Length: 68
Length: 385
Image 1 (cartoon, each protein chain N blue to C red):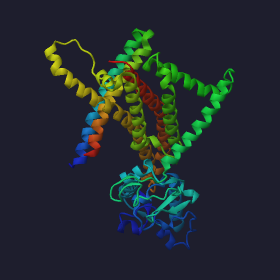
Image 2: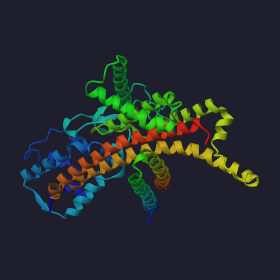
Image 3: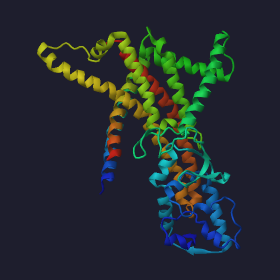
Image 4: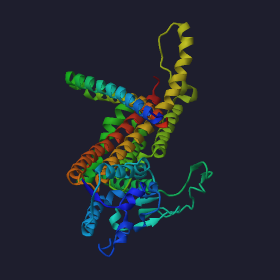
């Protein structure tokens, strides 16, 4: 196994983490919107912010994997 | 499984494409093609790469008819042909060449618009004239070994200019229409106005705050429409997505950072802006002494990281999307010359269409997300935490 293949595994692991995180956010947001449709807009805002933060962390992992 | 006898292929694993020196040899038996492929042989296929998309189907058919007319079928393992095709069409440099910036616009091979670049490599497409006179060897900033900014007019620059001119024309027109005070009429007027109102009422206003959202509306609207139009230009085949370049998204994020820091400093003063980065906490004094400097460093670091990620997010989404599309289309090239080509090409074409539709959605989504986060950052710079 060479370094690039390890980097690819690392990228995959990072994506698993990000996928779990964003999936959790999405499911929670759907539940909350179903319970409180009135504040759907604010929930959506919070959802996107949280998802963006997770995405950012995942991108860092991906860039490290790309550089390796 | 059958594939066409091509003695050169077994000798030279690098030159496994559609080798026309072979068909040249029996030009008497088979009518010669008029595509100008002859000059394929003998140059390195990294640069030979970016022109396969258009010609694939035609070429595979073409090779087939050649071989049939010549009456030469030789049984060889299909895996060999597939591997050779894969090394050519799914090669990293080749795929990147389709997604990254270039000094020419790609064209379908069938148009026969081939030209030779400064380095003597053959490309299918229309070269962009070198107006500024800089080349990779003589860059505007930096040296030939470490070029920082080449300064030559490139494909992405042309696309950015096109987007800017289109936006200017459309919004000057829209502005005149709105000034007239009439009700919106017609598809374009309604379309543009509904976008503008959406960005104003659902994105900028809640994020920046009712008090001073209007000051930042022009900047954020410009960002949204510029990114959106670059993304959409990327959805047109043979053009490219300028937002798929970190340099472009980096500048957009840098501008956002400038607005965030500038407006924050204008409002609270330099020291006030720095102080506002640290959230106020109810802590015992001892803990405060330890935690506050730590928080300060983390928050200042986070300020830069937030904007860097803003650039990386847009870049990664567009770049990765276009790379996946290139790989999808590359699969057709991998199957070319084998019997798998016929059943699987329709599947790949449908898959490419479906993925392009997803990319269209991503084009809107990323423009929205960029604008939304930019307005959140601006909003958080207006008020202390």
